[in-house]
Length: 137
Image 1 (cartoon, rainbow, N blue to C red):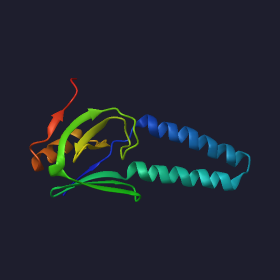
Image 2 (cartoon, rainbow, N blue to C red; image 1 turned 30 degrees about the horizontal axis):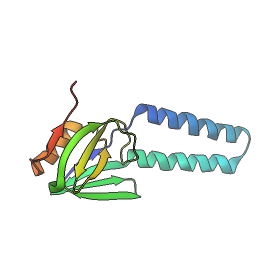
Image 3 (cartoon, helix red, strand yellow; image 1 turned 30 degrees about the vertical axis):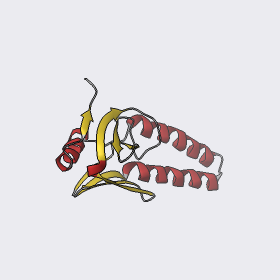
Image 4 (cartoon, rainbow, N blue to C red; image 1 turned 90 degrees about the horizontal axis):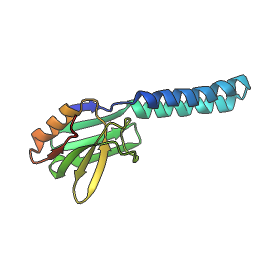
């Protein structure tokens, strides 16, 4: 079993800290404690989701988990293509430096493993028929 953590964009963390931290500070300054605590709980939940997004290869299955809310399994044998993407569609990815995985009949998912090359290599070991499309550097 091989596990890959999601890459987390610095700008995403900075934006979250500035917006939620600034709002929580304002609520504390205004002594609106209930709202301050609510914002801190939201920030904690978002952080948990960002830092607990993983992609696990277990045998012939890719397990995609984002926090405790989202869990998806994909038969690696059904993957037809992996290509680089910067698509902003909602997905279990904490970065816009993403890989688009096409599988099954017209299904797709976007992921953002820190080690993209290692992730692709491990999937290709299970299914050598995966077409890989990477952008020219």
